[in-house]
Length: 192
Image (cartoon, rainbow, N blue to C red):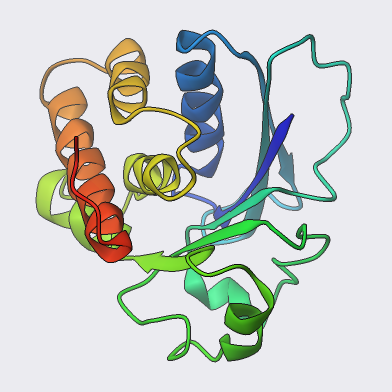
């Protein structure tokens, strides 16, 4: 089972990202689950959402305490929330930022995780360019797909096309492609 925890702030589409992740996984034949956890439901407040993908029924219903993947949609949470709590020793971390992990002061985490398991991507920048709003979810999910190989870019795009239509769906697809390609380039691979 792959367990994912998404950290962000209210208004960034954290809950939607978890739903899209589960939908993309379901489209690939996985059993999927997504649910949020709110401390306070106001814009800008820290928000956490969880997703699980598995090849068999998912019977767990509790929050993800030992994630395989941590997605951080707002880098300011690095200073105020223990976003890496319970991260598995071979886990993955993707941070929405134009700075490198070392520039973010995460050198210790970089040395602790396997090579290529912690990356950054400017998902909000991509979203502002294509959507016109700071909604990094599609970029973060596509980046995770590229980073972990757990799902296809096409599945992420199809999930957003299922929920949205027209220009919104197209813009999210563009954000997803930019993010996927950026992570693949950072890994030294090309989008196949």
